[in-house]
Length: 185
Image 1 (cartoon, rainbow, N blue to C red):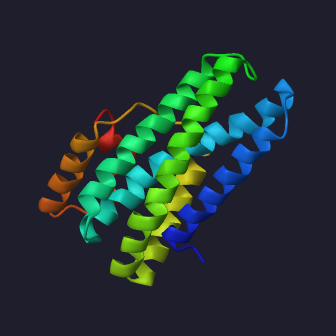
Image 2: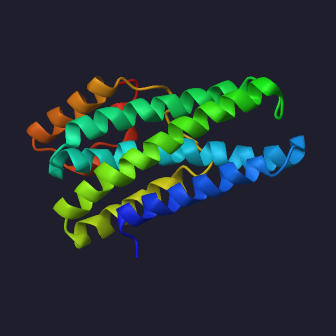
Image 3: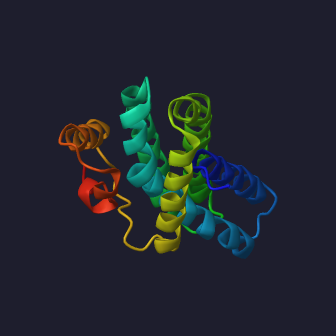
C-alpha cells in the first residue's frame, strides 16, 4: 500500500537500520557506502515531506501548525548535520560528531512525527487521500533520487507555515506547493 504515512514510517525504519550499520564498521570505505546514500535519503525525505506531507497536514491536522513548525526546525537540524559531515573526512572524529548530530536530530524528529503528526494525519485524513499523497511522495522521491533539484538549505519554519497557510487561504491546491514555491523560506 502506498499510504503516505506508511511510506514515511518505512523511511524511518531505513534511517534506524542505516545509522545502526554505521556503528558496525570503522572502515572509511564501508562508512562511505552507508553514509552517502543515507545522507541523500535524509535530504530527499525531508524535502518530500515539506513538499507533500506537511502542506496537507496543515490542511487537516488539529495541532498541525505546532507540529509543522517543529518538523521544519528538525529538518534544519538534520540538514546541518549532513552538511557538517560533508566538510570532514569520513570516519574522522569531526565527521562522527556531525553524523551524531544528524542522527540525534533525526531520532528526535522521527519520534515526534510518529507520535504526533502521523497519528494526527491518519485520524483526520481518509485512506484514499493518504494513498494519493503516497503516490506523490514516491514520485517526488523517484524524481529526486540523488537529491537533484532539492533545496537543501535551511528553511524558516514560520515562513514555511505562513507560505502554506497563504496558499490554503487562497484556495490553492497541494500540487502547487512544489519545492520551488517553498525554496528559501
